[in-house]
Length: 192
Image (cartoon, rainbow, N blue to C red; front, side, top):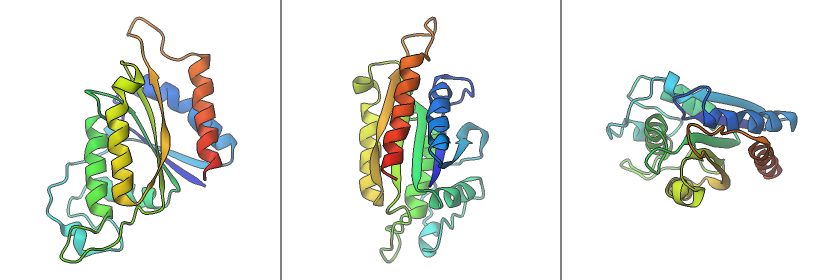
């Protein structure tokens, strides 16, 4: 199966990436093909609500010429989409939010003259996140947003692994977090 990880962290050696590494390794050991995309390294512009995407139901067909249409094609060829992001102000980072906005309009053909299909229907989505607060107070709003996103797009919400960082003077990654990341990968793999 194909897994697409969207990396929403601005830091390539940050906490979210530290959590992603054993998670991705476990998925690959289980035989899945995994690709990770660093969103801060891509040109992702915000949606302008022009509705050009609603005229063509075969794909993204966005009027904005940036990296999103190619990324959308990768997502459409994946079985599992993993949103890997630190939580800033109780939600994902800006490039991930911009991408999620573009995908919901570009791949859900609900907003044109005629109501069309969701091209995301049938895919699974999961969250891999890090936050400074307890996860139930730090990542809960993002999780609820993704649950609603999945319901709206016809995707299946597959769950979240949220790990807390206790501060800049405290090491983030440890053996317990690694084991939880690997266990989460195994749980997601069982559902594919």
